[in-house]
Structures are given as C-alpha cells and as structure tokens.
Image 1 (tube, rainbow over the protein chains, first blue to last red):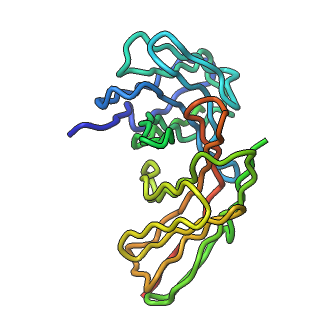
Image 2 (cartoon, one colour):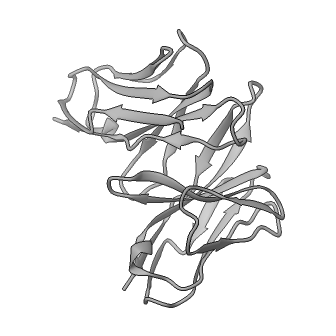
Image 3 (tube, chains in turn cyan, purple):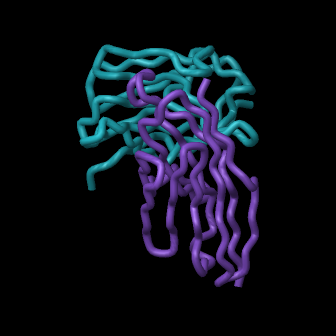
Length: 115
Length: 112
C-alpha cells in the first residue's frame, strides 16, 4: 500500500550517541515534516522540507539535523542524543488540495528513549 | 502568533451519550481547520478539513462544524471504538506553506 513509513518503530540509545530516524513516503508529496510529541506539549515541529534539497527549521530544531536528497525520504538525525530528546517522533507529508489547503498525513511514529 | 486551544482535556462518556469537543483558534486568516484522530501508539489520522465559517462535515458518528472563532466536533451516540485523542489544527493564509499549528488534543474515553 502507498503511504508513509517510519523506521525503526522503537529505539533505545545512550546519551551522546548519534541516532537516525528514517521516513519514507510513496505519494511523491512535496512537503515533509518531522514532529515530536510529548505529554503536555502536543505536536511540535522540528524541521520541514518543501522539496528535495530544501529544508527549514521549525519550532524546536536544536540538536537535530535533517537532509532530503530524494523526494521520498526525509531522515532525522540526532547528532549527540540527550535525555531531553526522549520522545515520540512523527514524520508527515502533505498534499495540497484545490483550495490550496495542505492536509498532512502522518506516519506511525518512532518511540525513542535516550538513557 | 497562531494559537489553538482544545477543551476539555479529557472526556469520559458512556456508550450512546452524545457530546461535543471544542477547538478555539486564533489565526490572522484561516486557510483551513483540520481534525485528526489519534489512537494510542499510532500517528494522527486525518478526519476532516473545514475551510470557512458555517461549513459542516460528517463521517459516521462524527460531525465537525466551524465558526469564525471555534470548531466543534460533535459525537453522536458514541461507541467504545470512538475512544481516542482528537486533535485540531489550523493552517494560516500567507504563512509558510503547509505548516499547521496543533492543539494539545482532547482525550475521549467511551465506556459500555
């Protein structure tokens, strides 16, 4: 089935290690997003990308790096993981409708624990 | 700055007991208001887009309505399978394309 997938689904790592979360979509949507979801904060935007090789910061970008060499992939890297980055991470891509409204479709999430 | 506030934070209903969830928003110009459903351990699932005040959308037991300041998600005769967290989000006209501002959600539990 077409859609958006994330891997791994669960990850446990240690403070200071580099971790990469993968996101792949089969719709050829231009826009892709990374969010983190924490109790009391809801969904917070980390980074987004308008197209291959075009990325920009969201609300909480510190400690994260993204790249987008192909339209379908949008990996998120934690260069040196910290305990405060323990969270659930969601990738999304968006489709623009005839009214120029961008509906976002989400992946299943990656639960990351940093010890 | 765009703001979305959802209430109540949590709601417990008995099966068949109808109710409404509220989403109040502040945005300089509304491009669209979105409702999502999120089950535990899963990503948000798109339900509806509302574009302008007065618009209504329905899907099974859910009906979403929109005014200039808020949106309601009405749940008629809910069933236990309607238990989930419901998220509201807005997209602003003229903002950075595609970015949404989300509320923190209403956690709904429907019991037998």
